[in-house]
Length: 229
Image 1 (cartoon, rainbow, N blue to C red):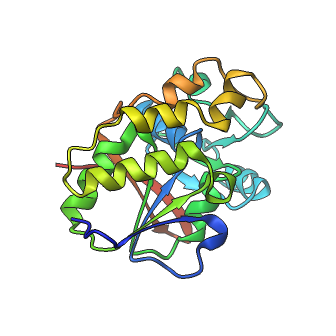
Image 2 (cartoon, rainbow, N blue to C red):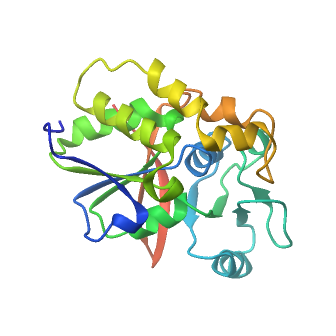
C-alpha cells in the first residue's frame, strides 16, 4: 500500500531517475487503446520507439499489426482510437504501438522493476495491483502536455487515491478529464484519426478487469494484460 508522501507525479521531461514502481498514464488515448486491443484478443503489445521502428518490426514479423497516432498511413493497420479499434479482430495478434505521448512515457521508465501503463478504463485493477504489490514509492508519469494534461493528471491522482485503500470517488476526476484540452480537441475533431465516441470510451471507468504491465522481452518493451486477484 502506498505510504502518504511517497507518490510523485512527473511529466516525461522530469523523469531523470529510474523509479522502483512506475505507472505511466495516457488516457486520451494510448493506454485506453491498448486496453481495448487486449479486450479484442491481442496477445501482447510492443511499444515502439519510432514510426520507423514500428514498421521495421512489422516487416520482420509477418502477421504483426502496427498502430499509430493521427490519420491512416501506409504500412500501418490501425490508428490510435478506441472508437475505431473496438470492432477490430485481434485474436492472438501482436500489436506494435507508437504514439506521441504514451509509448514515449513508458520507454522513459523502461528499467523500472514494476512498470504499469494505465488509463481510466483499467484504473481499479491498476490500483489493486499496487496494493497487492505493497508499493511504498510510486512515480506516476503524466505523459500529456509535458505533465500538465488534466485528463492524465486526474487519472493518476485517482489511481493513487484508490491505491491507498481509500474509497476515492471518481466523479470529480472524470469531470476534470471530460473538460480537458484533449477531450475538447477530440470532441471537435481537431485530432486526426479519431472517432466521435473516443472521449466517452476514454472515460469509461473500470471497463476492463485487468492491469497492464510492461517489461523487456527479447530486447523489446512488451505490454501484457495482467489479471489481478
